[in-house]
Length: 185
Image 1 (cartoon, rainbow, N blue to C red):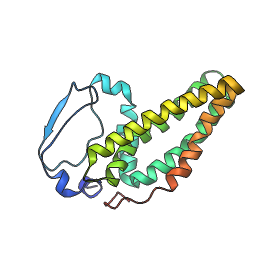
Image 2: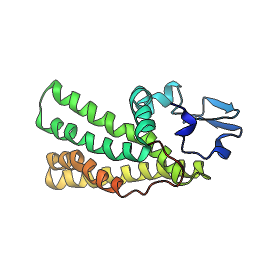
Image 3: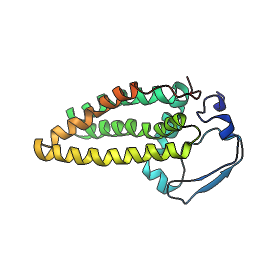
Image 4: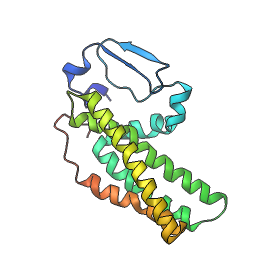
């Protein structure tokens, strides 16, 4: 597969000199054209902030193959049974279900940044900042709301809401319009 055919950034943007840094700032880079793809930094601090192996080996290539929008929709739906199974199983199997649930949900994070950049192709940095900021802000509000639910109705209710939230996210992702820029299938 030719990655330049699936990259969501317009050719005039990715064909110029690109510079950047990782999340923690320890790794800085500069790259001359053509810049076709970058999934994440490899420093130890950044690797601890996200599922590097899963994103690199599984999520990134699947999103390239199916398209970022389709990947976002279906990974949320695929996570749902693992969240429910976590609550219905006991012992070590529950932790396996929780790990798969978390890996699937986390895999959507990097792809959501790429999708945001597809919606704002001339402002990729702004798009990345908006997506990351929204995710962190929504997470903070969500944890606060779930804490209130747990205090008022009990921890099991809060866990069930957490397990079923990907269904709401799937429904919202189905409403996303197609980006104007060419996206992988």
